[in-house]
Image (cartoon, rainbow, N blue to C red; front, side, top):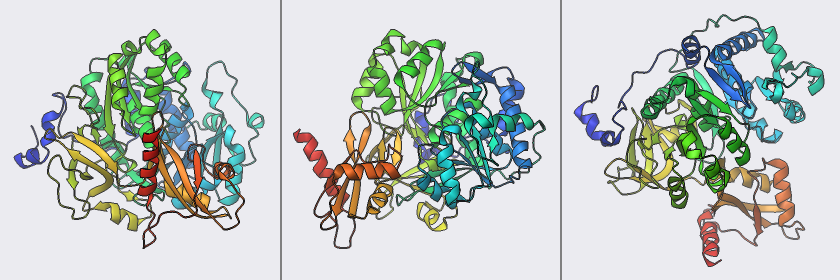
Amino acid sequence: MIGLTPEIMEKRFWLKSFDNYTKPTLNYPKYPAHEILHIIASTNPDKAATDFYGTEITYWDLNLYATRMANGLIDAGIKKGDRVGILLPNCPQMVISFWAILQAGGVIVNLNPMYKPEELKGMIEKTGMTALITFDGLISGVQQLCQMVDIPFVMVTKLTDYINGMKVSTPEEIGLPAGWHHFSQFLAQSTNEAPPAIAFNVKEDAAVLQFTGGTTGTPKAATLTHSNLLAALFTGNELGMPISQFIPIERRNIMGVLPCFHVFGEICGIAMSAITVSTFVILPRFDVDEFLTTMERLPHVWFFPAVATMLGAIIAHPRTKEINLAKKLAIINAGAAPCSLDLLKKARAMGLIIVEGWGMSETTSVGITTPFFGVKKPLSIGVPYPDAEVKIINVETEEEMPLGEPGEILMKSPMVMKGYWNDPEETAKQLKDGWLHTGDIAYQDEDGYIFIVDRAKDLIIAGGYNIYPQEVDNVLMQHPQVVDSMTIGIPDEYRGETVKSFVQLMEGATVNEADLIAYSREHLAAYKAPRSIEIRPVLPRSATGKAMKRILREEEIAKMKKS
């Protein structure tokens, strides 16, 4: 293969499993990531960039909106390197904000709109965020947040402002606090359509801060540079060409149901739509009936990034067969958690094509995937991306494991983050000599296919959402009657895992399980709160005080097998 020495070919033996269309190595652009939008707008101006309940924004208009907003942000005092939070569900305003912040030289901080003010406070303090873009449904919560931390610039939108036929809101109608900015009015008043003249160092300049659990369960902000974004997009586009080449540009649609505040939805939705000249079909949340209704009105979707929970609901729904979904959908890219064999079998019987993949916030969402035209190996996450190096090591000795033997996945690639924002200690733990220690335990077969067998971290993945047990335990430990807490993930057929906490109470405590669940829901996003809590007289800890959650997990699995 061109550009690769025999030594590299031997090391990256999985290249033999690539689709025959796929280049093993790429030469990446040297311009900043947002230049992609400018190029696509200039070459395909009338192609719809977004579709929100049938209302379209063309690539030409999207680029103009983003440029005008970028200039408006600069005029408002946003400087290169300033951190700007996006606290929105999926909507056109999120897409505009994404490209505008990058153009302005700002750094996007992705924030989950389901988070409580207490949860957001630490993220804002961690990143030094000075601006926030949100929507009217969160005004009260953001006001509480602004009492905790200083956010000089706040802009608010109403989600229906970008749906044809709906009246555009006013500051008075949404109850906009004094000094805050109204999204639509801000954009209308920002008339400068000349791209900002900002110099970028694409390898060094941060583009996105994506919160992740790191190696300890404490949320940290992975610093993704413009170079990281470009590598993720151009390799993703390269891997998708075996399918996209057969689909005319005017018919290219990508389904945007995954939350774009998560790196999976942001990169494989917002950004991948641009590089592939696709229309990003936006839904604010996953509702199976709404999804199927949207699919029914669309002629075709070539790429649908999803999680197993979504696919289970779609496949089980009777309308899926009625609308012949397999005819309307080319490729489903499943990530976040593995699909069960039963789910894959049912999908195949319906004619749906699912390819599984793997990525992390620290790898700009991508890194390993199943070749579209290659061999499909059940329960495998596929083979490494172009320009990615992977090795499987013994966690204790750090020696490479033989093929077929499990160990920790290490990755080195252009997609690997620069480090954790303002956290050199944790960066040094997880990034060593350019190798990212992923914490995932897997083995690799003779064809280069990788199979996840366990997680070194205690991360819980429920319904596609990442939940860090330590965060749940920290909340429960704040209750005055709780002296110890341990949270684990319990296998669940529909959600992948559910959250269960075990607590030890102080002597004479009067609270019960229901009280503690209600307490956790007051301080955590709903999906993080434990579905069940069990009170025990003592929790298992080692002689050194280490939580022995494995015992609790094994007990729960044993109960499930008996029932």
